[in-house]
Length: 355
Image (tube, rainbow, N blue to C red):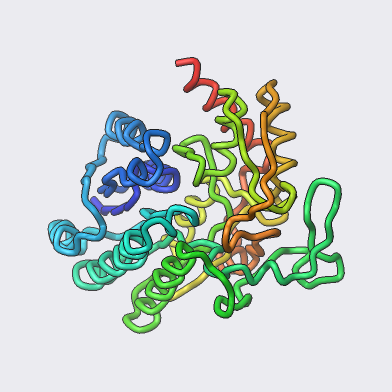
C-alpha cells in the first residue's frame, strides 16, 4: 500500500490531511510530538486529535518524533523507503509572538526541521510529492505599503489597484520588509522547498496560506484566529484585538479546502512550485466582521478590547490571489465560505464545551 507521511498529523491541517489521504486509500504515517502544547499550553494540545485519528483511521501509525531529530527522521523514512508516495509537511511553530520568545527553537523547528524532511525525501523516496504548508508571512509587512482605504468595518485596497479584484499574487516581493522571526524562519523553509524542487528535481510545492482554519483547530490566544475567537465567545473569555481598530482583513480557508488542494497537486505534481492559497475574495473578513458573524451564530456577545499595539509584521489587509493554482488545477474549487466556516467552528466549540 502506498504511504502518505504527514508531519503535524494531530494539528489542524495535518489531521485533515490524514483523513483525506486515508480516505483515498493510502496508509498514513503521522509524525507529531505535540509541541503545540509546549508552545501554547493546554489550550494548544493536540492529544485529543491524535486519539481521534488512532481510533477512527484503520491504517494510521503515529510516531511522536521531533522533526529536528535528523537521525530519527532518516530512520523512519528508511523504514518505508520508496513506498512513501507523498510527504505532507504541516508541522511548525506558527506564532509571531512566540517566535520572539525563543528564536532558536522557532528556527530549528521551522527551517531545520523542514531541511531534515527534504533531505530524507531526497535520500529515500525521491519520487514522492512533497507538500509544504508555508505562509503569507513570507512576504513580511510589504502588503502594508499597499494603498488602503478605511471603511466602516474593514480596511480595503483601493478599487483602482491591480490587487483589488483577485487579491495578492506570488510576485509580491519577500525581501526589504519586516517578517517577524516566525516569518523569517518560514521564508528559509519556503526557499529550501523550492530549491529541492529546482535543484534536485523533487516534486515540491510551497502553499503560502492565509488564515488556515476549521473545527479541528486547537486554538490558543497566540494562534488560531477564528477558532480562538469563537472559543472566547462560547466560554465568555475576554478577547483582545491588537492594532488597526479591528479592521484588519484576513482571508480564511477551511482545512478541507486546503487539503483538497494538496490532493490535486499530488495527483499531478510539479517541481519547485509556489502558490498563494487562502479564502481569496470568496472567503474573507475583518476581525470586526468575524466577531459580528460569530456572535450571531453562537447567540452570545463577546467581551473584547482594542489595543493600539499591532503585532510585529502583521498584515493590515491580506487577500490571496489563488488564480495560479486554479490555472494549474482547474478542477479544484472551494466548498466553504465564511458563513459555513464559522457555523462549523461554533458548533464544534459548543459541543466540546457541553461534553
